[in-house]
Figure 1: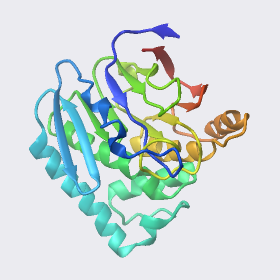
Figure 2 (figure 1 turned 45 degrees about the horizontal axis):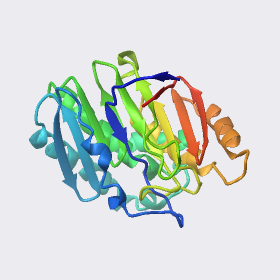
Figure 3 (figure 1 turned 120 degrees about the vertical axis):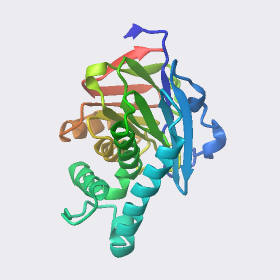
Length: 265
């Protein structure tokens, strides 16, 4: 791995149920203190949605409008289709659903998980795409640790992996030609979201942020406590289409597959 000094952004893993779990305030989202030269931070919170947006200018008003709109679409669909919220299994496509819901349904089917496994990534990308349409060309939208990034220059995503000795010591380099893309995470030891596995960090890079989110959940579910669990999980990664690559960290072990460049921090 090649050493780099420029740590551009920090990514905190989401939480699943485990005795090792700590409250979200455990790290007080220290990754959000890592600034981005030339970009302005905007924070938007609405119910469960908690966005940190980095852009050349303050985008609070437009971001609030976009968040309200996309949340209204998802919540409205759930009111008429309550199974959408609770299913841990893929659901069939629905051509009548709003675009963000169709993306979540498709991501769930691709990864073999319920559609809500893709909600954070789907909302992050919907807001990011909306900001792009309003003329914002260089931005990062992070939603609870799931990132839609559309930068015009190279950036590095630093990986926080709980109590693993590898936590914060490496990152994933994103070249400009890889973006826009999604960088999403799942963890069985850190964060609040459901994970059935024991990984300290599973990070997935994909052209679709919804797909990256759902795939991270699926891969994380495959990581058990056995010595061969990382290899088993990486074999599952190969079965998933439409993702660029993945990184898995558990304790002192790390595994990677696909088009991901790991760099020392």
